[in-house]
Amino acid sequence: MIAGKAILKRHPVQRGVAGADDAGRRLDNYLLARVDVPRQVVYRWIRTGQVRVNRGRAKPSYRLRADDEVRIPPHSPEGPARPDSPLPDIPIPILYEDDELLVVDKLAGLAVHGGSRIRFGLIDVLRQHRGEDEFLELAHRLDRGSSGCLVIARSRSALLNIQSQFRKRAVQKTYWVLVAGQWPEHVREVRQSIRINRHHARHRKAMVDEAGKETYTRFRPLEQFEQSCLVEACIETGRTHQIRVHAAEAGHPVIGDDRYGDRPVNGWARKQGFKRLFLHARSLGFAHPANESKTTVQAPLDAACRKLLASLRDETADPSL
Image (cartoon, rainbow, N blue to C red; front, top):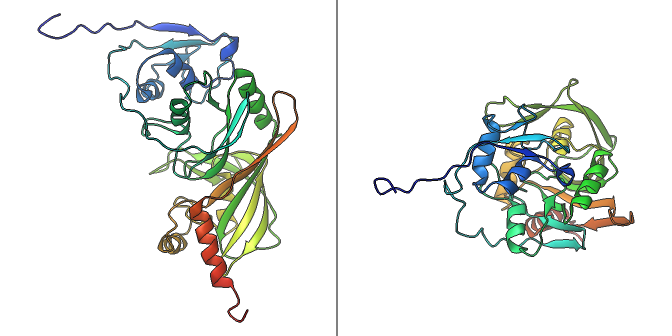
């Protein structure tokens, strides 16, 4: 004890070596499991290059391979501690559950995981509420503003299996989207390359660019209203903001999209009390990792989406009937 202050013990630089069980695990999740520091500290380490994988920089989303060497910076476990207060009691609807998987209904506005500007995400809430689960990992991602089916792995083998199916485009992903205007019958497939502009003035933004990555979306109109249309969108690729960009490029942006959408249309939706992005992961179809049986899970629309559709149907109803 010096001058009334405790001497904080600091861990020196550590060199972790990823084992076979770590293969396929995200770098950020690997670090969070090894060190007792706040999540935002881990992301700051990665962002500033203090964390190195095989002596090089890596992104938080980097998937480790067996025998990767990970540099972990010096840190104090007594340093800025994790919040003592529990995370908010946010109900996470479970759509499907067995020993290998959970499929949950992600709420619109809830990020799937925490980050440098987000204190917590769905996976953090789920881990807090299901303390009996020793292993819970996101098998894929959904935009923060979207809702619907999200797969959570309950074992390392299930995680690697589902991620492999996503990479091979073997997962059937169907979304329900409300778009502005009358969706044209002839627009059923969109094949455009998308590039991420990471230097946008305000935020990361995707844009159509031949130099980008290939994307493919199939659209099918489900229900037409006077000034909008409910559309089914099936994607084989899974690029950032793919459906939102393709819909906007077709001239029919997603209702509630403040990044690629139409401001007057979004203003109209807010006047109806609708304050979210109308992008819903309606269903997922995949081969079960335990026995390869075909498994399909559906998520119902939330109350806000159902209410908006009901009001649109009232507007288009024939008053003479």
